[in-house]
Length: 215
Image (cartoon, rainbow, N blue to C red; front, side, top):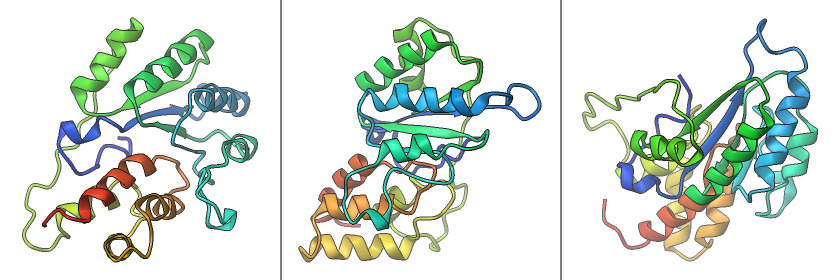
């Protein structure tokens, strides 16, 4: 079960949210996997992702002092067999990267994360059949304990819960008060996701919408 499945929103809201993950299996294909993972990330970096990460370090980091992602640092710091990821803001970029990943034939598991039909279409576009499908069934009983949809859409892009609801609420408030631009707020939220699956492009769009949209 990948941690990218729990993003809040309907299928249409993921049109700018495509994720590729490379995952070696311990004891099966992890020997020599570090260089394969770096190769995977290099391929993805060539197709202009909006974020990348290796589980220990994401492309955005508070110490950078800039909203510019550092992909080379992510690639260079891969030091162990671990899952790595690249986040794209368009199907076209994802498909182009996936074609090269298929050609590279790295021998490790590749996971594509998006709404099911969109992911299926990407597979058709590159001429492969999907191996399996994983679903997130969502919340069965929301009660009134959860934040509103604006907050959930932004916070659940980090499947490990590293982007807190209260931080998202603060960023929304900053944007509404013009204390930060949507781009600045999105980049700051992305800093807390070392897996690199937090999508600052989608976050920017959602923050722009949050300026005026009611709960």
